[in-house]
Image (cartoon, rainbow, N blue to C red; front, side):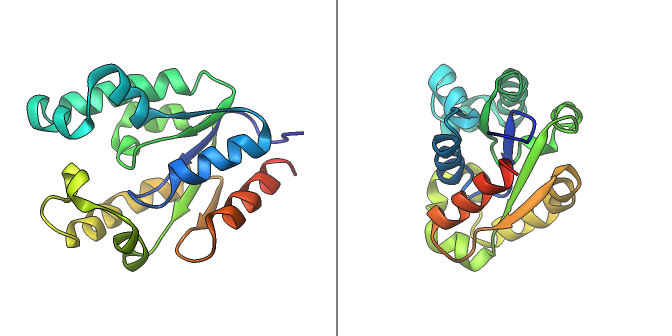
Length: 166
């Protein structure tokens, strides 16, 4: 039985494992999984294309809507790394169960294709700068934090599922 209030929302930097771990946690809990980046891409096309053609501001508007819609569901929800920079999304998240996934720059850059991440087109140092800017927001919104830098994703997902049921 899930003891934490749903939705269970995953936040954290790009490449921290929000989608992979969130999907596993949802399966373990027997509930639906929603990835807001996937929702946006399904409805509006590739995120890189949205950034290139419409700009970041338009992407963030689409993201704000996707986040608000997902937070109405009894599900595990994975947000894009930058979703938390929107003040309205922050306000919405304050009344939900938020799980922060942390990761070191070394670990994330070993597992991530930066070419597919529009905000990282300026190189790997951009990841650390972006994370440093967003980290205080992630920490403020989170009920709990799990580090994904080492260890198997399955173990981390099991730990989060156990936390959600106790």
